[in-house]
Length: 194
Image (cartoon, rainbow, N blue to C red; front, side, top):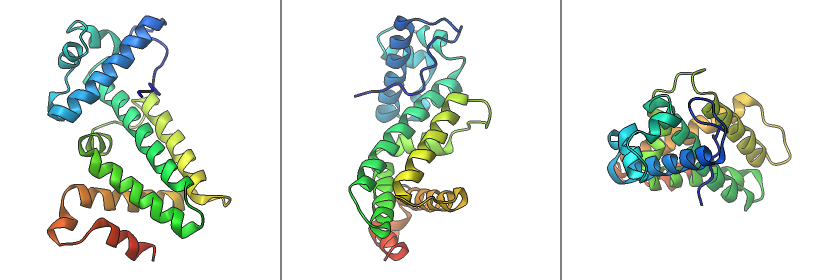
């Protein structure tokens, strides 16, 4: 099921209407479908308009440019990634089991959704330019911080260190570096959290 977490309640011109909200959601879903089937290069405003079954220019009425569309898509991907990670972490008790679940589910998501993962972490989203995406990033960090820490309050620096480590594992796994060395990412996680 698709949830539009970045919907601002209106279109690019600031109009607020339910039809616009549905259209925006449909455009983001079409962008995700294109990303999965044809890669990032195929995701253009015109192609998204075509793929959505709307007019070729529909995306131009809801996004200021391609980067704005990709930022909305990245926010959706982050929400999906977070949901998967939280489900995995919630099912565990104890700090080490929760950390293993965090690293494993994060990396598994990246491996299963390589194009989406690369979009989120390699696209050029200038800080301060995409408030909807930044809001989702903050919500993700808050949600994951609470889930991983359990009853403890983790420091922001400590949590970011965990996130950097997870990202490093996922990046090396998706690029094939572990496989090239005959190492499974689960073994790397086991070395981090014995």
